[in-house]
Image (cartoon, rainbow over all chains, first blue to last red; front, side, top):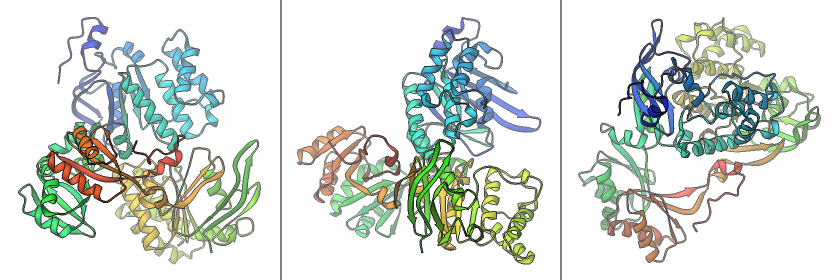
Length: 320
Length: 306
């Protein structure tokens, strides 16, 4: 991890060198309640999922990044600047808050243009039209937001947050209330922005969706950072958790006897129409499985990793 | 007797058509109800509960007509609304007992039944505390408990996992599943999360723009496709070439090799090629169709290898 340069050189230079988001020993407490507890991490361009049980401190973290809250201790830097002290960085941050923070009496277009003007954009109208189109709201743009469905309000919020084409986009449960088609479209949109070099951090409870959007995650548990990085790499580091693989074959019992003899395998269980294998050395196992079944003369019909998904990784992190 | 039946059910809100001649017939089970926002899901639920009169058409629940027997229907239907609807200043016991009594249970029976359903949804010593201090997960449980209080034959659940974290979601889904299988109560779950529907439901109803889009058992949407995916840690290109050399249609896709499964000899060819090249094998899996394909505008692409 790199340390941020001292903030006396021009902001643009700093932004070019520093990670887009950087937290060093950050804590935030409300009275005696510790919401965020000594968190250090940095994020570069790309898309990262922010995960954790309710009350883990995700929203507090996003609010500190957006400049709504100053950290009680530690340093928060976004594009090299402190968001709670340097409002100039707002111009390059977009935030989609979790709460319904839109005015019902404005039309979708007016709301987005209002955001564009707050950001001091010269051609607010054109930018708003582009943003509305990006979230697919053009047909409803001239209706009052009060008449929108939840998914539409959510998209209006997203349009308002990206109207100034921010470098850093922070989203708190952006998919809430969206229907399946809207979810797919929003995933594509976030993916496009990440591919264009934006830094995107979004919180979500829907692990299947997070897994489809990307592999980078931050996991918070009770105010602490439980893990960060590629969830597959995080899984590989959990050496105390054996890897489970489910195999279907032409002769499960025979395959089981062959596999249990191998040092990489330490448990084999026969199930109905399948054999479940536990191994502490996943890569060693992966190298021998085809050859072992070839020697045994057993046909492999299905080989599937049973606990490598984001859901299992999350479960292991939270219930440790 | 079918669980729910509608015939040319139509509901207009001024110029907006929420339901446009909906015809459906559903048998008992755990049914997932999906549809775009504004497709008419909530309108349908309200009509089935007899809270909203249709503009035209007819509907029946458990053989009872919604127009003439709405009161009877509500006696056997439990409803869990999506929005926050709980009074903050009473305990769960008090609230659920109250709801049970409103449904016509005598005082003693209401108390006993409340104790039972609160235990079923997993609320124990918290039940005497005020609901205002509950977490989202606990509030969702109370909402489910009040829907079950009068021993209904059908449960209508509107976005039951809204706001829950992964653990809370799993517990709620498990609870819904158990309610459906252990008690034999039919459940209609309205949700946007197709993964969830896949997990708990046996039957899918999809509506779009007030019309029926799909109505079939879940398994028909998640069938296996004739495509076998083989994932290796490295050397997918070599594996694809080796399998092509053995005369199989193979296409590399990142770390995967996709193969057309026409003949069982393919399995042996994969095992032999992987062993020969000593590649680290991650998985061999037949690809499945996904529920979300019905919402993709482009035609489902699960079929072809080339």
